[in-house]
Length: 219
Image 1: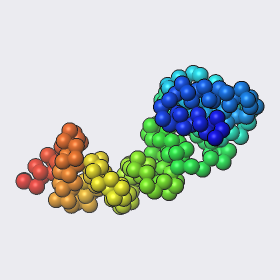
Image 2 (image 1 turned 135 degrees about the vertical axis):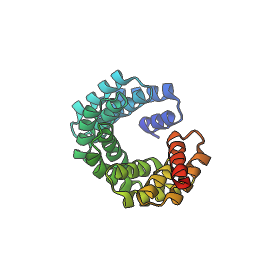
Image 3 (image 1 turned 120 degrees about the vertical axis):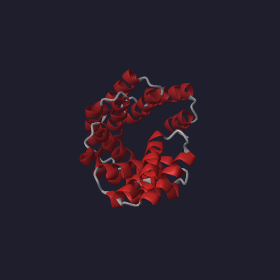
Image 4 (image 1 turned 90 degrees about the horizontal axis):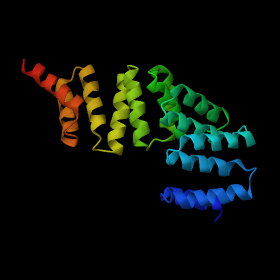
């Protein structure tokens, strides 16, 4: 097994020092190969060493300006630092250079979300959802974005899909409760809010909504 693959395995097993050693050796053996720098950049990002991570990703881009995963790595560093506009640029470069994976579309969508551009977020979260139909987080965020864009029927479909993936998803139940209120189905809404609270007793939004629905039903 080559050193980069070994390094990635060590990183996944949280053996960061061993991963760093292997990536360093890989870079020393192939200093003109961008992949070693990208992997080291990813490792440094995991370790919250953002300043050095940026240097490694930039070095990879110097060696290959079409290194899509280097732009993706840079985007992640900027996202972690809540520099959403700058992160957005890097994720765009990654996609323009041929990276068409769920994660990059998801992260790009989330940068728009954090800036409250929910209409701009939607197509990227849709693409991520298409590419990763089994990813609970991606599906949920896509459903949430649909709700923010007022697409209530679509929201219902996606949140039900989230519950198929994870029955005990309190936030999906809460959002289905909100959908039911929009559809003027108070009893159904109450069931979902109750279920959300069974799963997560400290779910403040569900508790508040449940109280309001119960009050309305008793009047």
